[in-house]
Length: 166
Image (cartoon, rainbow, N blue to C red):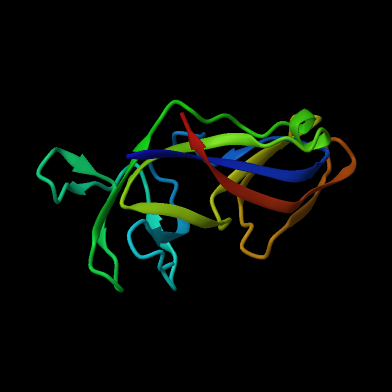
């Protein structure tokens, strides 16, 4: 069992509190990433998706997990369980300091998450308090104009990484 913490960062221009639409523990937010088999090292060709609202019985018969899957190459089984309470929004100050913010903790057995994909379902707030919802980062960036604050807002250079958490 290894826990992996998903960390995100981005260049936030006139924005703060960048996070999933319903907050860091949003049950409806879907995480997309590839999986690396802990046995043979094969990386999945397609992205796997997991969310807090979807669980399946563990193949080991011990409760429920958010993902149970076999490696297509060596047939070894693996599971992923999401652990809430470890995430927080990426702030403007984090962005300015080029720091990463923790988003979600994954208990991984047999797999290692790699290559997180930013998609839709994000939100952020302008420095002047205007809320931007349903942000789609599939194209890698978001730009809009904050009429209340009379300034452009932008999210660019989105990056993510998985770190082993102790």
